[in-house]
Length: 511
Image (cartoon, rainbow, N blue to C red; front, side):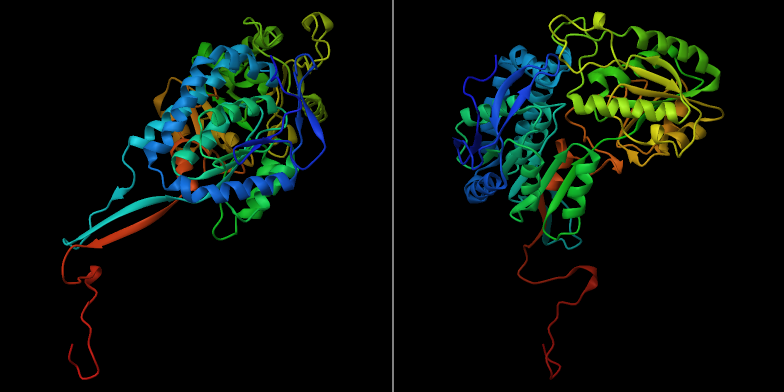
């Protein structure tokens, strides 16, 4: 069921507020088109109030121990587990991914909370032996201050906890803007945090659109911005903050991801991995694969098997456990998908599967107003200037590219895009796997696996235009803390490293 109160406001300084603006917006079920709930649209004034609350709460929050801060998160951890089925259905209803993915989103959230809260009892800092026996030297971390978190719709529970859980345990306060497509999930997460009794102002949530997110970025009191979302928005944030001393940013954006399938591939694994990578979440994962780079020796057999499955993969009600692909998130994403399908046709693609517009017989009863698409698969001769091979679509739009020669040629094609988020290689030859490992330009890479998946103990981020840093797990600690190199002298005399003289001389030559 949708949340009871309507419209819903923002969570600022420990209170639920309507906000400064009069505008509202809808949460919509992308499978049916029905409205789920109404939310107040946040304004820059609301963000300003949230940042002020976070700034004022910072000193009290940072004064708590790691363990005391983590105690608030353990309550959230248990609630996520207890409400697994319920919240999985909420995720599925609001963002459209099939129910096993909706539930996995919640599982990933509690895994991240567990990791962050558990890390509170792990060693922090590094002891570095000094070259002077009487000195101790080590590094300490301290929180940066107010952290702005801007999260996407496709993982509306998991990714917020990538950002927020570690940030809080490390002693920072938070201003968070959920994606405008999934405010219901944002509401539930905010309610969970509020239920813990966390001090007022430590976590603040402003619902809304890009203007609210931009207000977070523009506020100089926000010491770090953590962003997961589109490359276009992320690059704008990087341009704004990249050169500002004292402000930090971690960005995880999209990609034009690929799977390399060599002549030594196990084709059962290759086909399975390719279908998962291309069509899970309706191709709307930042790590989804839109390019399949296949060796000529296995190309025809792989193509035949992949096309058969793409023609038949189950598109339907995301709450039905038999569904493999749910709807696209909204009509804007459907239009983008169609646009790039036409780009591929115009650039000479040979279309192999065209389920761009599903027939009425494939659309579930009562779901005619949903945003339905099916797989679009084509083959095309490799040319590095083709838009269909270099621009991200974020949908079930998949190119098959045939290659000849060694693994080096496949990796060259793999890397010949502006992005570098994720990729996979399928091969039974460990030398090919290792070459790919060492030369593929990707922040996330997989061998004999689908090009999807995020275990919370690993950093999740890309290279090139796919990101800067990794706003998750251990790597996000670098973005939300400052390190101080601390050196303590235990002797009564001062002795310096590198042979530097510590003797003080005067004008008469005496010390």
